[in-house]
Image (tube, rainbow, N blue to C red; front, side):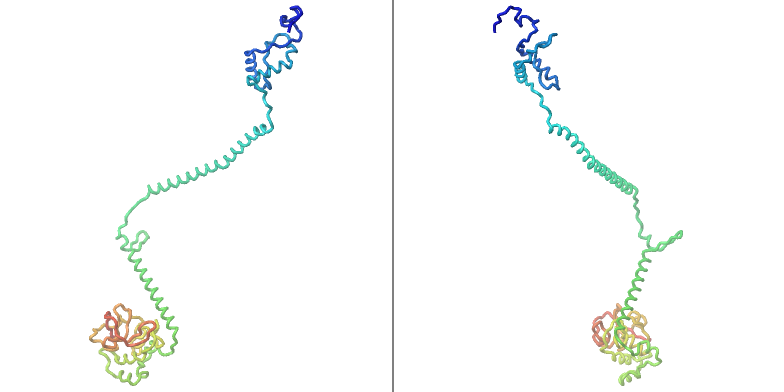
Length: 348
């Protein structure tokens, strides 16, 4: 563009011109400095367009023309300077929710993890206390041996007494024997009560002045009664045999001592009661009151007693016995099945 006026009319040649003029293009250095100044302003909404150094005079109005603004915008984009975007509603919500989520997470951690940690500590402390107590007991434990002779005899001192093992065992054995005897007697009584019998008992025969044999026996029994008594006895063994044979076929009844039913010792007791001999209802006691004789001297009517006191019956000669055998059997004569026995005679 060519000016036709004088030099005074040239606005570029006269710096004092106050009219509107067109701004000169920014150099690269000026644009870079302007970009740096804009970067140091964090709250600046836009990057300021680089301008020439300010003078004391007001900026010409012509410097804010659309051309100059476009040029400044191009230079700012070239240098990476852009307008800061306004915060959106979602970004503001995220900034608000972040501390809230952190606070809630911290509260949940404190509610769940901290009590568990304290509980673990308490449990470990209790376990440590128990371990310490067990350790103390182990350290303080004492061991000693007691001689076997210490329990061999009863002793007492200062108002205290101790019972020996032997005494305790003897007392226990006595109680067991008494209990067994009571149970046996009760069982015998209960079994005998099952059978009805209204005749004479062994006690009745013993209470009678006479033996009763002459009034109740048959003619053969009477003949046997008149025979000579056994040596040293007030009665005749053949008479005992005759009386005992009257009850052949009587059923075996545990605890029985009448013609309604006999057991082994009850049978012997009942027969001998009719001849004035009082015996207990027990194999052991019958064995004790009798006199043991050699088998070579035995006669029918003597009593066979097994050595373990488990059974007895009438000796019948020639290795035979007449007895009340066992439950389900009845009084009969049969061979003696064992050699483990001895012969007992009563009345001598």
